[in-house]
Image (cartoon, rainbow, N blue to C red; front, side, top):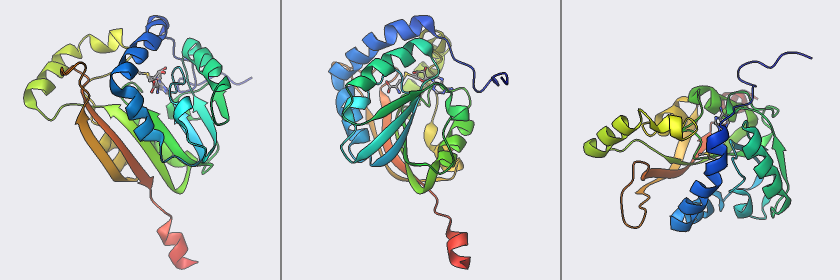
Length: 226
Ligand SMILES: C[S@@+](CC[C@H](N)C(=O)[O-])C[C@H]1O[C@@H](n2cnc3c(N)ncnc32)[C@H](O)[C@@H]1O
């Protein structure tokens, strides 16, 4: 059997994998549940979810979704996602793998879902390139991410805290701005709602957020010459 390349190897974050279910439950109780519903309410057809974690999105896929392939590299989280998939309202298949090398054929998805994951993925442009590869022309990327603040004071605080944040948060970064990377990967952002996710009325380092949809370009040149 061929050896796994670095992009295919599992990612082990044993401590983070143990605490993330509690972090997520807290976030969902303070508004993240609504954010997940907003992100996923318009999804249809064949979906690929990257870095699915515990499977927290699964209950929110609407009936128009035919099936979800959920890719998760962390073994403990993947096991939790498997359990969550059993109660999902739509069929979900869990696969091991990284977003930078998706175990999914070309042009086989109508939508790719990235939630709270572009902050963590080591090579975001490779992951977005993979999202574009697995999407059919005109397919949609649904994203929900915490992002770098546009306010200088908070952005500075994020930079300082980010010295230790990735060590505690399973590789999560506070200082990323995924939208230029999404555009650079060949997507056109159709909708993006920027907001502060406040916890009990307070700003936290991960408050600045975006929920949006971006479309992969149609193959206009081929259609014109056909
Ligand atoms: C903060 S959790 C978010 C989980 C889930 N998407 C959610 O919305 O709750 C970040 C996730 O990204 C995963 N991850 C880290 N690096 C990854 C990579 N290179 N490819 C895919 N997933 C990755 C982690 O294992 C973890 O499940």
